Length: 270
Ligand code: SF4
Image (cartoon, rainbow, N blue to C red):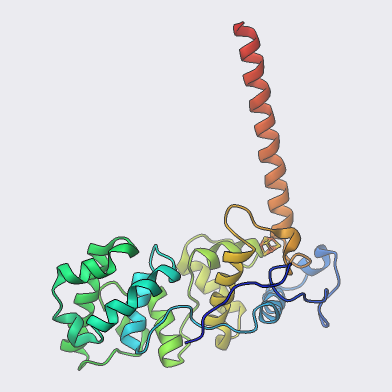
């Protein structure tokens, strides 16, 4: 399975001529007057140019292995999960092996992904349910998948899209949540509501690749703490840049004020 290699150019990825044909020119204000759906489609179009490939970054060979890798990726990086899964899948390659595993051995194998006791317990319980209630086959519907222990909508969305080619929803992780908000496409903070907003704005076939591209962008450019707006190829259409600039100026002002107050206090104490 192909893996994302990371940015190569000075700008983080191949340079894109701005503005793109078909998009309104800067300033950003003109773009913000467009309907939200048009703005979402413009972001999508641009993201596809920035990140032409959108493969799943988890390594797996079967749908069950993808489910397990996605469960392990909770509160953990995909890179860390990919270090753990070769040994895990060699020892326990399928639902039969996972259901019959010694739980202490399972815990040991997934320990470095964090929350290992819970993850090992869920993997075994999910494997057991696949054997007893789904004839040993991973189900391919959202309703059935989310009955498996440790499988919520986020995991089910990833499995359905990559293992079965079914687009039931948008996977909302921390990057999708943060960047979709910065782009002005949702005002919500709960993943379920963000997912509903994005499903209304994006074509169904692009639901999953939207998430993957935002994960790339969130790791490389639009990071949580220090987004590099000035080097971002979405800068001319993203309202987040102005907000971030404003917030940084506010934080800088508060810092200067605090410093001045401390200086004044020190002087008074002398
Ligand atoms: S312009 Fe800034 S806020 Fe908008 S996507 Fe780029 S890095 Fe993120």
